[in-house]
Length: 79
Figure (spheres, rainbow, N blue to C red):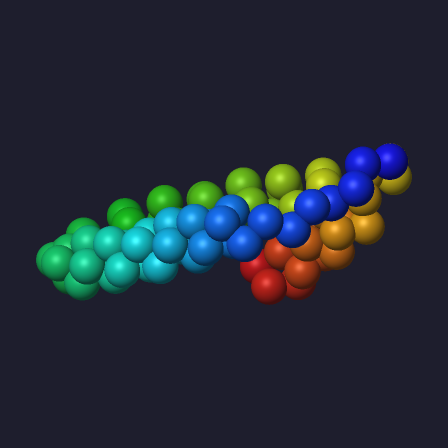
């Protein structure tokens, strides 16, 4: 079994990417005209369904680490 190594640089890079994606997502969505919100929401629902299927697959694997199982479980619950 592999040892998980905590690297603060990877954590900071991941947080930076997350913050940048959240900011850009907010900026893009806030500029969408109200007429286009319905197609945008249908695409969002489709992406949510894909995420749920992926989380179920990850949570259902028996040979994976417990971290991936818990993250899959949390993803299924939060979706």
